Image 1 (cartoon, helix red, strand yellow):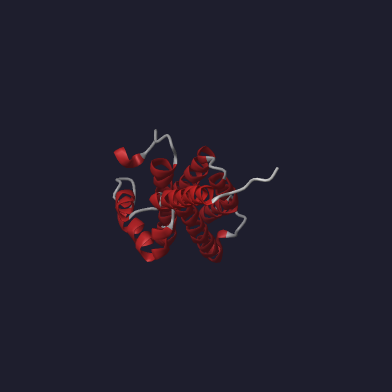
Image 2 (cartoon, rainbow, N blue to C red):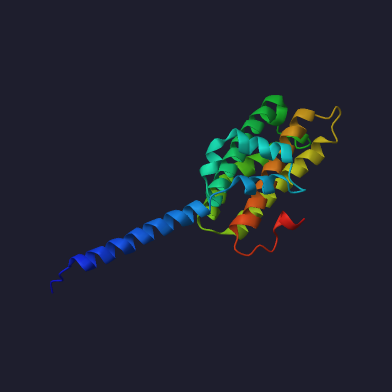
Amino acid sequence: MVTFYNKKNSLALLVVLLFLFVSSSYAKFSMMVTKSQIDTICTIKRINSSFCFEIFKANPEIARLNYSDLIKFLINYQAQYISDTLKFFKLSGGSSTDISSKYHVCVELYEYDFKERDNSLRYLAAKDYVSLNIWVGGTMTDAETCIDDLSTMKPIPQFFMKRSDTIGDMSSIILVVLECFLKEKKDRCYLNL
C-alpha cells in the first residue's frame, strides 16, 4: 500500500515534529539548575554555605546542567576529592596495616567510598534514588567516623579533619539536590528544615 502525502499532511507533520522538539527542549531547559535554586541549596541550615557557593561559583558549567547531571558532577567532584585525600593519608602513614592506626580506618572507609562511585553513577542513571541516597548517606557517615577517630589523636590532625569535613559537606549537598529537586516524592526534603 502506498501512502501519498500532500502539502496539508506534510505541514501538519512538520508542526507536530516542531512542537515535540520545542517542548522537549523546553522540558530539558526547565529542569536546569537556576541561580535561585543554587541560592536555596546553599542556604539550607545543614549545608556549609560558604563551601557550597564556592563549588557552584567555581564551576560555571553548573548553570547548564539539569539536576541529574548536577548530582553526577558532584559525585565525580567528591570522588576526585576522596582520591586526593587518600593520597595524603597514605603519604602520612595511612597505608600502615596497623589496625589501631586512626589513619588506617579513614583509608579503608574512603577506599570503599571511592570504589563505590561507579555504583552510585549507575544508581543515578537507573533513577534508583533510594540506593543512591543510601550510598551518599554512607559516605557522609564514613566522613563522620573518620572525624571521630581523628579527633582522639594528639595532636589532632586538623588537615585531615578539614578534608573529612569537606567530604561530608559534599554528601550533604548531593542529598539536598537528590531529595528536594530530583526525587518525585519529596518526603525527606531538607528545604523545610
